Image 1 (spheres, rainbow, N blue to C red):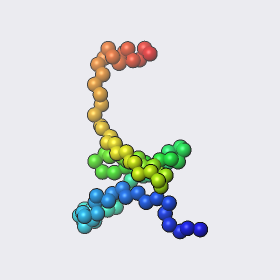
Image 2: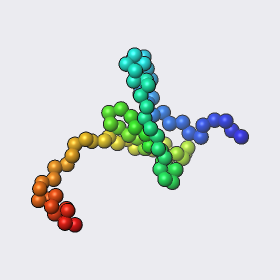
Image 3: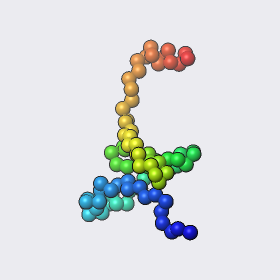
Image 4: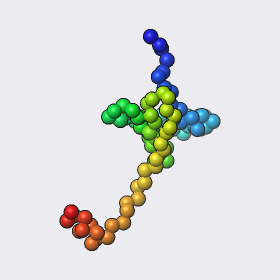
Length: 87
């Protein structure tokens, strides 16, 4: 039986040069949850700047998706809200 990870995903590799800074401002203790898709083909986790990333679990696939959450609400006028409510 092998005793090594199936796949290693370097999520915060860009912070490695700033490791000392993250330790000094306690960011090193920040936690981001991880969740697997229902079919276990993808894993998703959060990051800084409202980013979240989706990675394939297949060791042969290297494609990642990085998305950013947006707190801005789209503008919908009163008439549009009523029209949507009727549907």
